[in-house]
Amino acid sequence: MSLNHDFFVVDNNFDFTNYRDYFSISSDVFLHDDFMRYINDTLNWIPTLTTSSSELRQIKGLNLYGITVIDFNGAGKLYKIIDAWNNLLSESPKKVILTGDWTQEYDGEGNVIGNGYYERLEFDRDDLLKHMNGLKNYSKQIVQNHSGYILHLGI
Image (cartoon, rainbow, N blue to C red):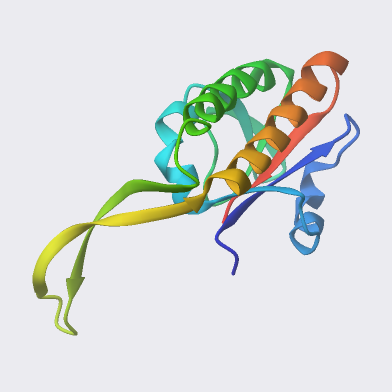
């Protein structure tokens, strides 16, 4: 199972009940789950849609473990948020090091082993920026054409 979140541009006629077809397609634009969780608070500002059975319902942010549909209403905000992260990270060293989640290790009986620690997240800046620029381009395409959707596939 991949720990990448894949993004695709789909047209207005896309049948959202067939989203599973995209799981077998390699996406050119993807972001690792660790990074997605790192920026998730800001992604929760975006109006989006997710599937519930066979219908779309409105949510905020991305469904990290399912599918999310970003329409015209969310694409402009997604562009601005990703652009802000892009500008910030463009100032980073080539190896981006971020502080992740608090982690503890447990033995087989559920007892904590040692002290907990924060995960250390490492990313290649140029690779991260490349995929973020791809997501910005997808967003820009939806806004300019006032048509289509961004399909997000969570992990």
